[in-house]
Image 1 (cartoon, helix red, strand yellow):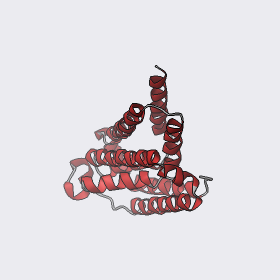
Image 2: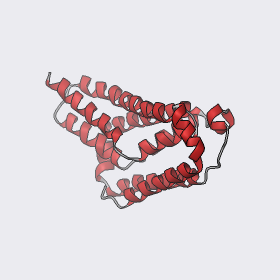
Image 3: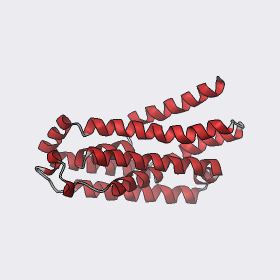
Length: 208
């Protein structure tokens, strides 16, 4: 029973994280609005795959290295900042499409592979992710948690991410929301681009 409560607490914290502003939330909104629900879903798949990588690295001990070695921290941090700035600039200067968004024309969308790459790279280069997963799985390993707990979280946490990101994608790809976006897409693109830039600056000046 104690292990079930522990797992539930970890997953609950993980769910609540999706209600706080951050690069992942902004990007799932961006990709769902600018492209399509499909692209939002595959971005969520990329987030989930990145979670799997982070958990495997944490269990293997690499998460501890990323969380404690300054050079590794700085490398991940500034690669992530650079990628967010790149996406921010790309979003800010994104051309306006009058019909493609409502009709879902393929030429305006991006491929599932490209969407997954955006999700995977953004989540993997988040400087907080190694700390988050490293602290959780480092504590579990040091407390000699059963193997089934580790394996369960290895599956459940990525599924958690996939579910929450997909829900956000459903909201922001809804046709009513997309109609509003279609009217104000130029302004919204610029706001999303600026927001990604602000997040990059916030990460640059954060202590972690």
